[in-house]
Image (cartoon, one colour):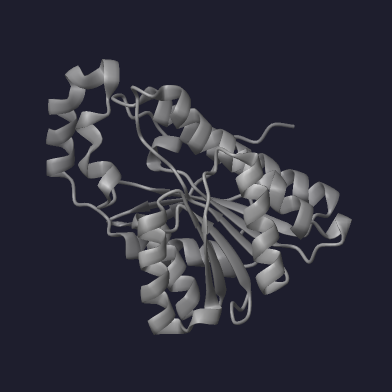
Length: 257
């Protein structure tokens, strides 16, 4: 998929991995609707991007992905501005074992909600032009992160949902590819504040911090580069791409018949 002229929607776009994804898509010729609940960060980033890429290449939309109404309005505004949607990056996420219901709501339920909303506009079976949806999962979506059981569960859910949607799209002819990216430790605000958000598992904070200190961490640009591969390589569908400092690996899973 050549990105020049393509229209992308990125959730959680105002900082961290989402910001890196947005910048990389723009560098490759796409136009991007930035969705984020942090209005201050979003508007600030929009100003920066306007200077780099031009005012007409981006659209910032203040949006809480927990709200179906706000997501619907964001998609309508994107369509009204750019005319179509070719790419969706479900990137918004939190890690908070204390507020575990909110973690499930943002990390998993919102991915489902936003995907289904995107399908209404992208599905070739209903008049759309197809495209690709990439969901930000985690290494915790492939194996347990013992200090964060709920976060682990949501990211396992994202991987499973992504793979099932890919299979459904192939079977039904949606014309949409679905992939998940599963990075290891990434230098973001989420990771830096991890020990304060473990809730009943806070007794594991010291051990967790020791593990983090001993590990080399990815930067957000490295993650965005790998995500771009999942967007542009049209042979990739139903993939879970593990990204670590020592390389990347496409995961294999049991096949049920």
